[in-house]
Image (cartoon, rainbow, N blue to C red; front, side):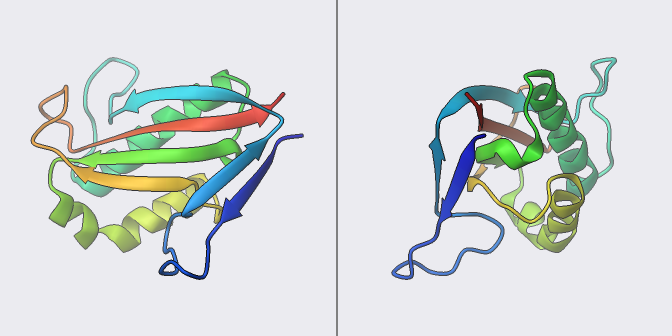
Length: 134
């Protein structure tokens, strides 16, 4: 069984919605490609950043499950947003989506503002790494 230890040292500010570090022991690493709000037909769906985040995260979790993993195996996640202020303004709603799809364990995370994503209609993209049992 893969153990993921979330490390949040007291010398750093308390994390909200992420872990400062995640240590995986005896694991197979899965590299998860960036996912946007594409539906199965290849079209961007979802009005607004919250709906697009839900679709993008769902796509990432579908890829993770296809590789044999589960949401609890996520060790690292990067969120790219074309409007970081809008993403932050919807942080509570996005947090509710996260907890519904993933739970309350958070990987090491980063959020980055970008000028645009591959699909011009995309507002958000998520990319990550997972540690599965060896």
